[in-house]
Image 1 (cartoon, rainbow, N blue to C red):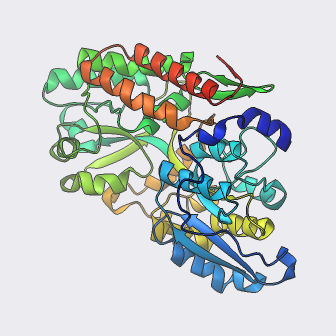
Image 2: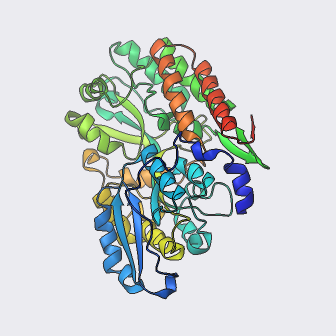
Image 3: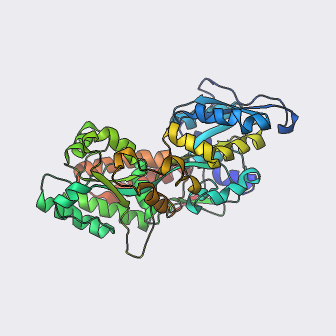
Length: 442
């Protein structure tokens, strides 16, 4: 998309999308050194990232390809989420953003709307073949531009206690209708046991479920944004889960609490709709049940479908402030497509790579230790990852997510109407975009 049109669509008042006053926060790091073009001599790049062990991965570059190309990368560890986005926008306001940033997929439109990310299509276009179409699409925002290289992804899956499914005579559901029937059957056999819980403290879970159902919350038409948080696909998801909560077929408690951990560890909750990174969470949440869980594809809305949603994931982007965009793009492509780099990312950072070629090599040739009894764990995960549905993010995901937590949190607690909570999410998202000066249609 031409920059002028991109800015008409995205910018207007978007500098306060995250409710920050740009420039108010003191800068703690500077951008790239001003030593001319990439061909003028040695290049020094700065990379903001939160991934654990990234400095060790970057050392591979600096001692290998980077040494040959005279491109040195320095890692500056950061917080993740909105905290990092705020810091990037603040630095960009002062023209001092780093050369490279790690950004979650849903944050890319916010950064692009503030003209903080460079189009690196000419430098990394060949990398497209390394990724599933639905993953690559998240870095293009539906245009010919490429604003980042996918790094890690979170394809969604169904996790269940294999031993307790056998004990209660349950069959692993392949459709959401079967999922509901399984929840009800379990309640009849063991009233004190829940198949799972609906949690409103992580918006990404609901977003991924809606994505699987075909939702596209933000799209563009001409010079206008179209917001459809309450589209038919999302309403279907909200009504499904709201119905299960209302009838008491599943629990209504949030995840990641001591009570939730205990429910998983004691068998009070015997399944979890999650993503590929779940083994790491289960290791600490339910340590006594190691080896008792199994993973299967996410239930489908119909027997003819084979699609999953995405919960989490991030990318590597080059900023518009970088004086060495070509060099920075070269590193971004290496980091997320080179076999040695991806193996190091898996070992040091615990990430599940977006690159399809890496999903069955190196660290992913054996199952996670927690799932040692499921040798095909990563083979199945790679197959599921290829079915990831495309997403559609907008410039104020933070507002939609915050409203979800408030509205759905109250609805889940009260076992009240989820469709009313979804309507609040839609209206709050639209109102915020209009307040920021975006052209919006519903």
